[in-house]
Amino acid sequence: MEFSYELVGPGWAQAQIRDGDQVARLTASYLSDALHDLLSGVQRMLAGSPLEEFSWSEEPGEYNWRLKTEGHRTLVTIASTADIRREEQWNDEGWDIDLVDEDGPDVIEFQTEADAVDLATAIAMAARKLIARDGEAGYLHRWIEHPFPTSTLAAIENILSQRARA
Image (cartoon, rainbow, N blue to C red; front, side):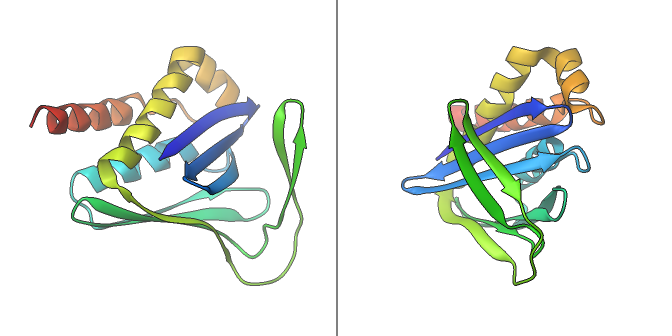
């Protein structure tokens, strides 16, 4: 399981989640606290919650995340709402997504079953990399509306550390 998350402009983030050949590239706007919502869902998942659901706001639409955990396995499903249609464009700096307003059903962008600890570790590592690069002040300056979820990341890392020692 691989996950990356970075701030790409004032109030904009992009993420990539990959499991083998499956990959989803997502964006989020400051209209939601995307990283906090993701880390909070992962923290509750690790604490034993069988189902976590949260959304990343877009302009327009949103990406709806669902983490359904049974035992040590988590089914990760990410769906885009009907008002998001993506046109991916690759350039020298990576990828860019243009959103087009269209009608239609929600679309599953990514679905995989993963080890819960592997999923949490990949997400925590991406968040740690982001804060190491930007710092809390830099993150807030770039994300605009919401501070970095420091305590939530620390709680995840603590749970992962305890599990590694067990």
